[in-house]
Image 1 (cartoon, rainbow, N blue to C red):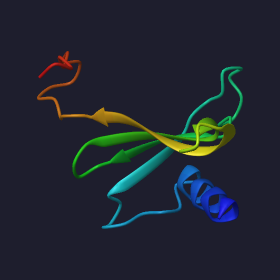
Image 2: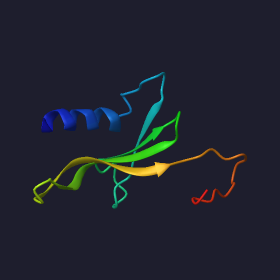
Image 3: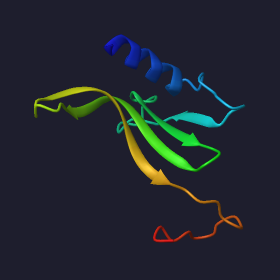
Image 4: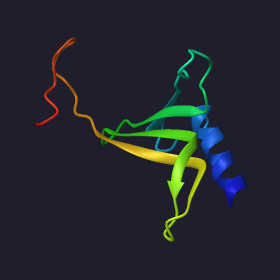
Length: 93
C-alpha cells in the first residue's frame, strides 16, 4: 500500500497524472532550503478550484492515535477566479 501511495505521489509531483484533459495540474514546490521540490507538490483542480499540497513526509495520525511520517495530501481550500490581474480576493467571500 505504501508503494502505491508513493508512486501516485511521484506521478502527481512530476505532473504526469492528468484527467479530463488537464483538469488536475501539479507544480513541484521548492523546499525550505530553496532546493528542488523537497518532496512536495502544489495540486490544483482547474475545473472547481480546489487546492491540495502533497508531501512525501507528513505527520500522519492513525485512528488508534499512533503517529508516523509518510506521504499525505493536505487540503488547502477552494480558489475562485478573479476578474483582473492583481485583484485582491477576500478569502471570506
